[in-house]
Image 1 (spheres, rainbow, N blue to C red):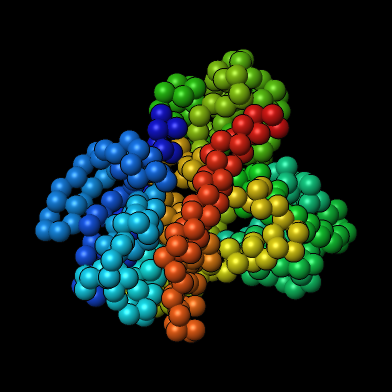
Image 2: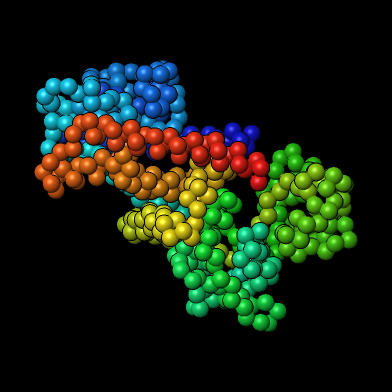
Length: 447
């Protein structure tokens, strides 16, 4: 069920973002009276071969345009009349341009048509982040609240963190919010380091230059979490915790004879008792109770923790939310640019840093959380805008480069050259798709 939820969220997000991206091209084409033959979310052919496996899940022709949903869920397209792209080559554009053709319009109009998808993705990202800020504000954990120290995962321990370390400075300066620990400017900056207090001593822990590779393999940007006492949050229906009678608000104080204060201590104790019926000591309404619970083979009993940490929330009005949304949206672009800078400097591997549908679906998670869904979808919208602006033929950015060349030098590249560039760009995209969809997933099986 969790896998289906991941896939469902990914498909919904891509449908929204691809549809809006293609609508951006469509809207500018219509604005300049350019004929649009097709508007499709997903491909109705086996990309990049427009004559192979042609069928649509849905299609309807309205006026001169056929609207549809394709069967191949890795993109989408608008077929703009008189434009060389994945659906038509130079041979289909013989003869002089007609008034309703893309090639018959001034370069500045063609430039806006090509930028339309990117513009729409940026607007979408800003709207999503602004709406989330207005609705929920900004929740944050003050640095002073992380008084129990941190809990590192494998990557955190590799950086040098140990359970219970208290982070007191970032890059030699005090910080105000715990999330500052993993901000892009810290993780992707040069010579970044953390100062921690451990057993009364101060130690500096350097952020490794290849942290991008390590985060890519891990699948998220978390490497330390604030450690804290906890109570029981949501109890999963039908799970061992539910069957044993565990309730929201209970505090687990012991597993067998092992005392429990922190959630990581509970996890460790439960793993030791995997596949066993184990007594839990719990504190409920001031009374201590002992209940037996059957621990599954992975050391789980089926509940979510509620950390005893006091989060603060900043609230914003509708107008105030817009600049916050703009900052959040372009913060994603900035992080992407810094990541590419790391790659070009040789401090990160391009292959390890690239994520495909599998990695994106995993980030959405197996539980449907609308706040998480829209946050990730807003981020993905900005990532799509950034990636599409890259100067690669077959992407919007490639078309933009050729149009800028035409506008500056007053000379248009030949149709034969554009067709060749389109083929090279398509090959590069196919190679990248093969890597993230096949090769990278196969390699994970051997790691």
